[in-house]
Image (cartoon, rainbow, N blue to C red; front, side, top):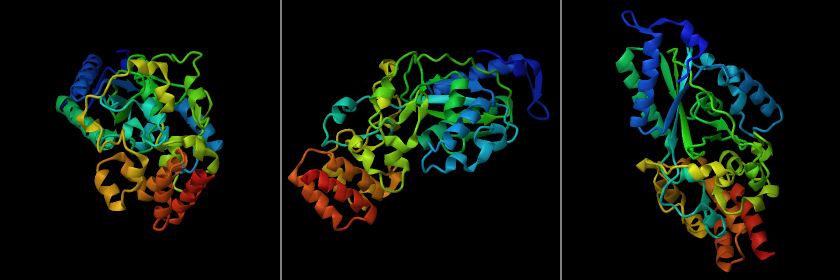
Length: 371
């Protein structure tokens, strides 16, 4: 574990009226935090400072080009996103943690993508929602730290506030930002979730790893909608994950054919990445596949009522897009399926009860089925 100059300059820090930690004690504490984190199920932890000046410039340029699409929340919080001590006062360092999520028993993703009548759902969403699990684990870690050093200032985050989790993870040595904008590790690929603890402890900073993408452009080349407009730059307006999850309105027609059978998210850039040959399966039971979502027929999912959608996807991250967008996405996938009378009938029947937004996509799908 490397120490930065700020940690070296601070020989003691007062955590409470009675307790002082020396620089060596902080080094020892950081080692213990890594150990405790692994005991809680995290595969790797690291520590970063709060200097995100370069990231702030990149974010501003990205937003200025309109690459954030309808995600207005990307700039609603101003500089709090890139200045951690403005979001949480007195933040000095950040604990970043990652947890593997790729399920061990699922159907081969490539096989699913080659069967257009099957539904493809992003691998991260096949099990339970990760937010609660990671937040609980990080809170347990914070509590363990508190037991060791006494009261200290902290706040736990899991994709729940204006936090630049990927640049922070890179600074904390968890990996590097790949050309597809995900964090990559030589040992673990990219199939993992991230979480953070903002803290007022001056923890020794981890050594960042170097970029190992090299001249590889596999992720750029494979993207169905060419959303990676330049290395390390993703235009959300073109990204299937954005279109099927974040976008609330109609999906632009120009991207509907390219979406194929992807009804929630897209993993193509990760599936093609050479570093994911080294990825490990998840050890968390919560991320196990539920409701056979890795092998469901599009027509089966399209037949669900709203009550069935809510009941079957209880505790799933998919539930947050709502029933309307669920049907919207499946309608597109059905339109991309081989011509089939059963599909045509299902589309026509659903059209009688669907919302105007869904019907716009059903009409498109019907046209694909009959032309």
